[in-house]
Image (tube, helix red, strand yellow):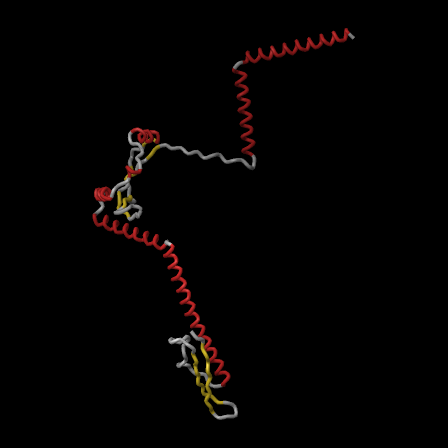
Length: 262
């Protein structure tokens, strides 16, 4: 038994020595290869990435390539100033641009333009851009606009301001209630007019039925009353008809029709 234990210990020691030698050889090979080994690894990774991209692009759910936006140069256009009726100004005439323009033939790169704006002409604030009434009129007159055009647009701006104020006034609660009352009155008036038409149709129908019952000849009813009457109150319309009855001589009858009250 002791001999067996010694043999097992020798085998384990031999295995450990072989493993240590293998590790030493592996480290030596890594140092000897140097950059070559890392380069091969990078190439392998690149090949794997390309294969993965090919597989993903070949699939049915592949994503389309993203669009790229690039800027090259800037071109300048100079537009003339025009008097417009923009109601955004507090008072006076507003300034706009015309349709015609002059294009500058000296383009500039985006980087040069951004550098110029950053160092020479920085972005202005809103209070620096705002122009007074006198400044706007002076710019328009200097750009070729006539005094008549400026005055016409000024009146148009004032009219636009008036319409805006009218809209705001109508939007108040009291005005909305008045509008609702006016609409209700119009609905009632239309209803009354429609009822009057129905009353006349009912009277015509009664007239036709009375003639059929009497067996008399039909005639135009020029003296037919209108419904509802102008004075209001109950209406009684007496219709006289002439005709003959069977077994008797010509006679005269009357039919009374009560109309609706108002």
